[in-house]
Image (cartoon, rainbow, N blue to C red; front, side, top):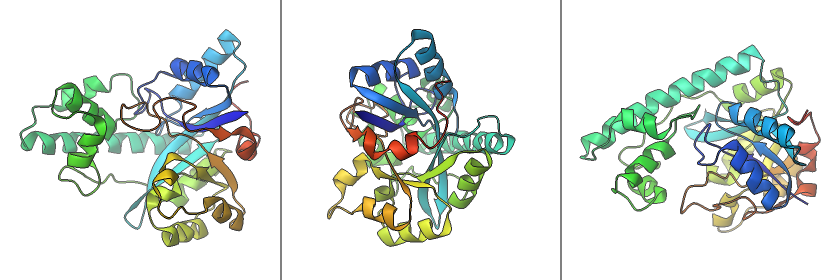
Amino acid sequence: MLADLHIHTTFSDGINTPEAIVRQAVAAGLSAIAITDHDNVRGCDRAMAYVRDEKIPLKVLRGVEIDTNYKGKDVHVLGYHFSETEPALRQAMAWNRSQRVDRAQRITEKIHSLGYDITFQEVLAEAAGSRSLGRPHIARLLVKKGFFPDVKAVFDTLIGKGKPCYLRQVKLPPREAAALIHQAGGIAVLAHPAEIEDPALVEEILDSTPFDGMEVWHPSVLQESPRHDWLAVARSHHLIPSGGSDLHGNPGRFPSRLGEFPVRYEDVAGIIESGQSCRE
């Protein structure tokens, strides 16, 4: 059996609707998924309703991805099995979403100043329906307008870290994000530690943040050289192993569909079975 516990939909910066994700999961033979949109659970709610109404035999976990900052590094925290009605967590997610809007507007203005004919209103139109505005929305607009061949090229040229139009977002520290998830009755998982690109800093983050799990299986590990043993790190910190594709669906970004980055259900069963799923 297969599972995927890190998926984005049109409610953040993915291109697939929650219903399309459910259909892809079934076609790929997945038994469990988690919708982990940035700073909101609307996609999970929609996927849950679709699975229930269509009587689809698929577990859908309530999930979220919260972007945080630790010593200048982007650190993403995944939450699972939490109550979406917890006021403190809802307020924190709303605050993060507002910071994303401010950042996207300032990035768009910088891009426009370099001679690219785009406006923030066009970015908002590109992100129509999303609850969490992000750089991929800006990148997709630039591709649609013919300035770049694909989203990766936009990041590599303009909006990736260190590029001329990159701007940092004001973010919570990971310890606070984990505490909010715990307060809402959920479990907190460190996302894609390979993307931090500093194993020593990962160890420091794990020592300072009360995580319950760590994302061991993620496409970013395929780019590591040498490959780091994240499963051993998780075990040394007594963390539940997790994994997922981090699917967005952008052309040119691996994976393009569910199932292309397979994660065994048994390897992430500890996360799946540690709380109540959305499929009630």
